[in-house]
Image (cartoon, rainbow, N blue to C red; front, top):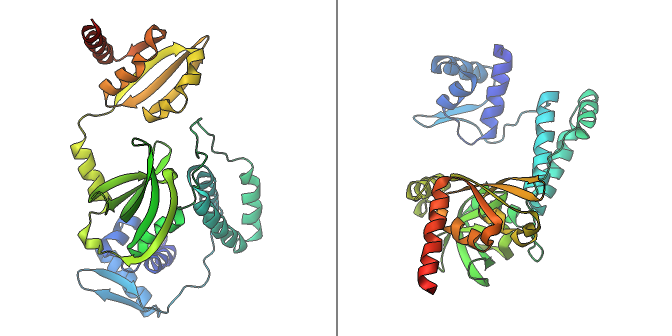
Length: 319
């Protein structure tokens, strides 16, 4: 990248955040801190009002804005790919907002870039792996509201359906972050009812409103701190599990297979092979017991031994 392009990119980076550290700029462009200082000085001499806070970073004075940014065709294609992913992995509210943003982006593209995007659009697809994205009875439209509450540190009031307890409860929570895992979005929040951090599946929220009550962010863990603690407290690492069962049993398996970490499903004649990533062998063994002799554990051997122990316990109990 030549220096003119780098200066423009640095200016865009500065406009994109409230404060940008010199080390962030150096890492992004693989340049030395000395070069960063020279580049920032060059921008200041060109009339860009860049301020600096000792030990913090650089910022652009309020009121200064770049003229409308033009996207390259490669950048536009990356955004189109993001739109396809949003259609598959986000909820109604986020899809709508991202669609509106893409309309604005398309409006500033040159004619050649628009033609390029149109030719790509029909040739990019995100294929479903069979995991249901939505469940009937749940609106699945609260992502934008949750993001607002996260950004402004507002308390959320919601009606949440607990799968384990099979009951809906009213909760007031202080959100600390969201993450996507196993094809579901999760809200991590401090629950005022339970007085602790809880993991809420967003697709199980029936009603939600952002209250006018604010909470102190510094009183709560960050999402990264929470996830780090959760990882440290995890009793086991995920284990690769493969089983084979009669094809006609699949109607009984239904969504249960996803709760056990389904990774792959392959039909082989009148049998189906399922692959899971699951740390809890005891839970898996208890689930497989319901299928009796019509299921075979292909691997690991440790799960076969857990199954033997489980069956022996049952036999001793009933004899």
